[in-house]
Image 1 (tube, rainbow, N blue to C red):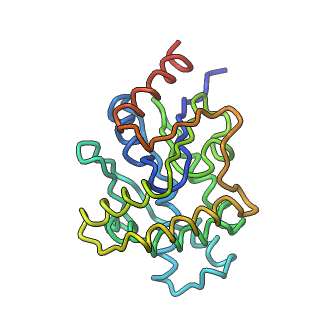
Image 2 (image 1 turned 30 degrees about the horizontal axis):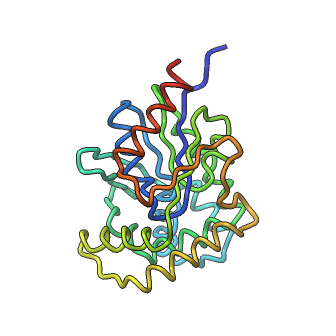
Length: 228
């Protein structure tokens, strides 16, 4: 029996560097990436376009199954372009409203189940870096390398503020701190696949670490757990 395709899971709340770390790892290893949070953001955007209520679980689950979405990583720019029905929607997904809507969808069991198979289909050779909130606990619970990234809320809000400003999106730091706290609470207290640290995950506090330091540490784990 052949060994499964290796997976690195990167879980944690928003603003801890999951996206950038994922892309840097993909560039170093030549692996595929999965931004699971973007799937929920795309679904939220599609729901708005189809005039669906975010409380209509059945309709949303059906829409999730039919969702025409794909990703195109651009490691040189530390970003991923997201396409919905052949239209790039990357900028629309990165608003705080989009994040809040995605978080609301993530608590719906039928929606999560519809997206589960799609997420697992990203597991293709030579390997996958999967980032999200339940990658190591639910979606890829057999992953040989599991990482949980964290950082203090103020630092996370500052990072998010800088990201939005760089993209020309208006934001207020106080509002971001409040929104991050509210989203953390939703993600950690939801009944389905809450944000948790997997029992076999390595926890990395990125508050005072550079992206390079985080990536190097994870590559050491890959060398020890996968390449050895």
